[in-house]
Length: 222
Image (cartoon, rainbow, N blue to C red; front, top):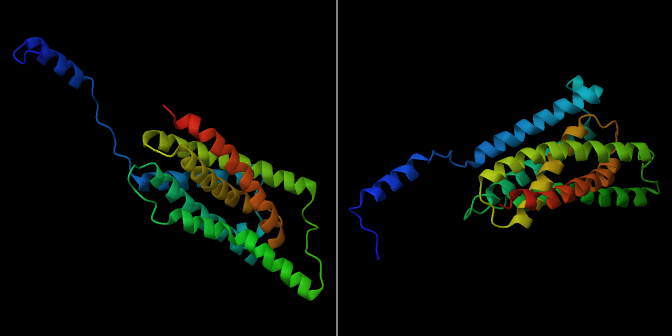
């Protein structure tokens, strides 16, 4: 039997349900971008307080190698950040942000191939003397820690959104956090060659992105 619309109990039930509702702040991608930038700033601050920054960075005259690797990491990380955030809004494409981020971050390993070719042509060895086990372990540890800091904030934002492809969201979030976290580390990294950044940085980012990729789906699944 259909409910009687004239029954005052129905009106009371509807009023009670409506009374429990509260307005929800609309999900805005730009707010997520602002949160990502803030978290990146906190990661930089943490690296500064715990490890310190490069002398040339503190003097506001960074070396060309530092500018090159920092620009790649920051630009690529921001592109991946936009892609990850837009993936949390159903029906909204990333506008090619994921492709742009992939191409930018791919410049590091591609640069390694260029360095290898130039070394072969010049009959010289690649300058890998800086890549000591301690330096590599430190890069991995700091990049992972800062990436987890950025990634945790992005996951909190995504929980308010509605990502439909959790695997893709996990990878995009992982690479965004890994790139931005590694950028924070790069402001301290004492290495003065692109060879170190072209080999160790991508490996550290892959580790961080994989860890976050595995952690994101359970945290977003309701």
